[in-house]
Length: 638
Image 1 (tube, helix red, strand yellow):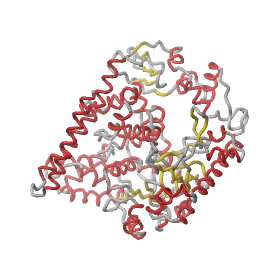
Image 2 (spheres, rainbow, N blue to C red):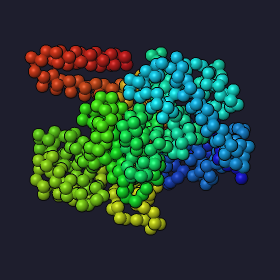
Image 3 (cartoon, helix red, strand yellow):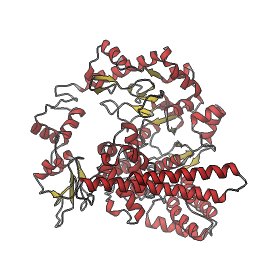
Image 4 (spheres, rainbow, N blue to C red):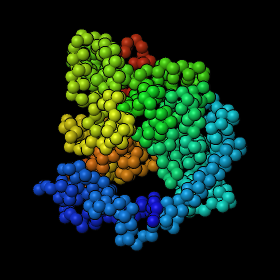
């Protein structure tokens, strides 16, 4: 019996298959604009075509019944075959030989996995040795400036990748590893001149699984002439799945289990700072947002007895606030109590330790705020409480958050606290909370229902499915509620956000990476689309290119379908020239909207500034001039 097909083969077969050819055997497809085809959906009866295919991107979506996926998904659903059978069928059409990794095929997965792990271990040793060389002075200085000495570097296995084309490659080849094995481990990349070291001139952290085996690396840019991303991680391999790996978990797991507490920080140096300060339950994700798979990993370590604490630390800036709201979206998946810890001055744990010492890091964790309280305050802060309209809007947005609190004994207290924040009568707030609970909307003013999947309702902690699993397990494994971008609000602002994302996903070359990077820095009013924006930003920052499949893999699972829909939905233009103009225009409009928002904020600051404070007054005026110049250059470029 054949085992799992090698991932590189799966990707090659998919890349060389035109999805339109496969779908076209079942559906008559006609042009629906530049790069888009449509036909009658094969999965449900319809009279008007709502089934769209994007051959260039390799995806399909039906805007009638919600079915979507790639060429493998299509064959599985149409022909009722397994994933492996779908791959084998397409490989046979192309004449591609497949390799298997789980036994029964030409390759033995256990032997292959062991070789990849051994290669990573050897690379980790090499990087550690290089940290002591004269060339690594820049790396040692970086660590020292952040309060980490040689012992700290040794404890966490921090090393240095020399600025060399193939020094690691030659070293590992000398240890008996082939170029193919090094590529499979993600240690080398392929170029015109052959393979070369993936990490060069960077500080390197080994990423270990829960058992302590090195499965990948994270590398920090140090040199001014390094044009790569600030952090470069190992790509997805047979042993490294970033959605399932948590940095520091191998060191923290024992104390997490014993203390029933985990502290989630944002980076490698933050993990180091926390552990050195005595917060030995700190972990971090590896180049991706905290997601469902991470939650499942942590739940296994924390235990699912309903106790324990999960504490998220975030920067005090706007990005940190948004990260906290994204974490809140998945809060229900934990049975543990969730908290947020933000330093008063907005410092991350590493900078906080440098500025105020180990005790300040420990105090940060101990002075945590319950997640619900944090979210309520954040939600209320978005409204002008000086006006009646603002207070009513804040109540409507925050009441569902209170209604979602699992422990009903806490709801009256938070209801009173909300009434105090708003300066409203307790009875009025109680009615709003009861109404939100009765509706079961549970959106917390931030579109939480989409983030969790399902209909957004929270069951009580005592509820247990008929199969005996815990409520958290049942909710974590439940399929997400199908979501259609047609359900998005039709206001001009949301429409602009949707159209701009659609343009970037479908025509990244027409938009250009610089404009895409600028656009993904824009604030979004729609939280669902904001997650897609963050996925695009993450992929562009990591890969230096925009690919839909990478964005699909980057966003939380419930949002993957939204990305696919945006990638497939037709644009109104009929020619390539018109499409290029349209794409640049709509993405530029999104950027211009953000610049206009910034201009409004600056004008407000200018109005509130005392003219006698000449320095501040002049600085704001200069910022306004720079902003207006940027707006003019943006529009003139298009």
